[in-house]
Length: 63
Image (cartoon, rainbow, N blue to C red; front, side, top):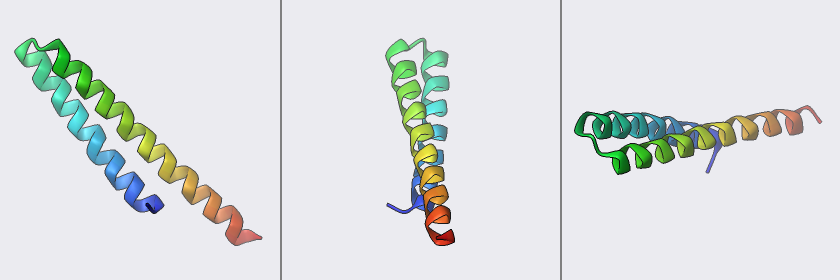
């Protein structure tokens, strides 16, 4: 996956995770809240991966 698609997927997972957490909190469903937190963390990791790929590409391009 390219850096842009990593970042897009990551943001989508972050938003979905936050939404799932809010729904779980509203319904008193701790399991849903936990799954939302995991999904949000996964999204943050994907965004970070995309940023690292951008930096690596920039470093290689300067060589």
